[in-house]
Length: 77
Image (cartoon, rainbow, N blue to C red; front, top):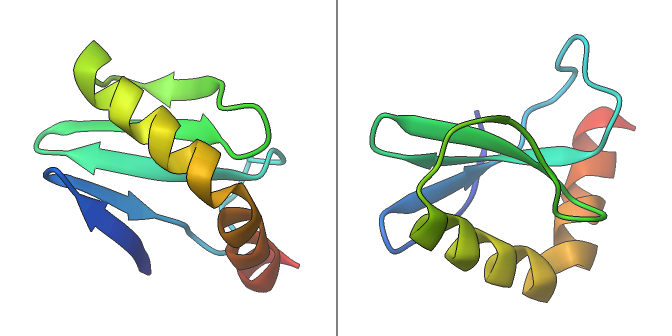
């Protein structure tokens, strides 16, 4: 499980060859909470996260779309 980033107690991970997912996405983990976020549009796909942490995750995504997509393609291309 490659860790892509860590900030404010949130861990961002991307996985390779995850079954059943066709949308490029990343996982954000904070304590017991985990959610999947689409890289391209920031849509929350599944999971749970607090609103405050979702705002931080969205800001992170906005600043790192190209790097996230590059890593997704490297792992799943």
